[in-house]
Image (tube, rainbow, N blue to C red; front, top):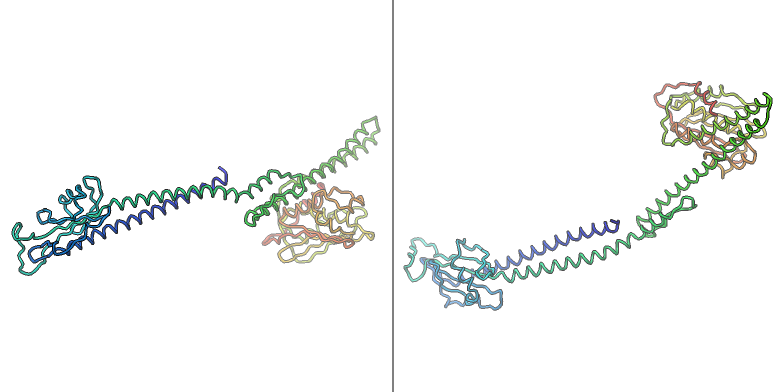
Length: 497
């Protein structure tokens, strides 16, 4: 079932329940009201009949000729009937319209025990329903009064007054009301069903357009996004949030596509050169020295391929895997000084100066990966930070609040503002580096960022044309740790660089 169908079904079910409850409550209220009116009429009729009787100390006298009783003389189907019986159940008097209901007239003298002023529903021989009430009139209680014996005296010792009201009109009114409520409820429900279906489709039409737009999206097209709903409500918020997600996904897709293209290019070039060198070496017989030179060159290309593959494997790990094995407490000042002292200096390389304080700075990191991070930053500063004066490269370790900072700064030509946001992307190389022909594949800084993230830190760069470049790696200060230095692991990264 579609969303429109489910929404309509839920609404119509709730509406049906509300209409049923309302109609039932209205019908029950009408029934209580109408039946109360009938009871009140019967009770009032008994009071009128009682007023027509003369009550003595020993007997009750019925004298209707002295009082005019209007009960039973009105017209219509809702007329009252009444009857007066003596103590032996003999009819003393009755309403003139009682003869119109012979079944009722026959049933009234045979009523079973009925409490004084009690009400009963009676169905006569003809199937008509009546509301019946009875009242017994007895002599007044006086001190010393002796009631007359049955059959003695001119008047009976008590009278039984019976009043009846027909229930047919009330039941007909309730039946008509029930039919009217059923018809109105059904009409309202059907009209609501048609209206709800149309309104639901209209309300969900923007969502349908968004679904159709989503089906037509192509990740290869730039600027792919959903069509906005234009409703100014939550659907617009959903569309904007989804488009923002699509924009992030598009950026990631483009980065991955560029990464794949650059990776294939960087792998294809050394492989092509390696294969070419080996084919040339095998084309005809050579001397041992020639073969040695060819194999040495091929070995260099193979090592370059190995470094690229290792870097790609490292970068292929999810960034969420920040928990690395072999994480140890490290005192950053001493570790940096020890690592720089053990790092071999290449010919023509500018001087590397370490600036660190005397206060210990404890962090938790993987010593080998931390060494690779520093070496990559130094290699980047040496290759891209060269200047005419061949100025020195500064390595600084310091503490800023709850963070430990490891920075590498050069005094080279700097990085252009348009290149600065992309320098940590894999295989990205600035236009200046390409123009100068600096050797590299563009993976060093991407590895630096991944290592910093894996160790729970971050890395950033500040630069400007002609002002040099500063890279800062920040790590959280380790609490209650015993700093150690692992020189062997720091030196072991040389083989992977």
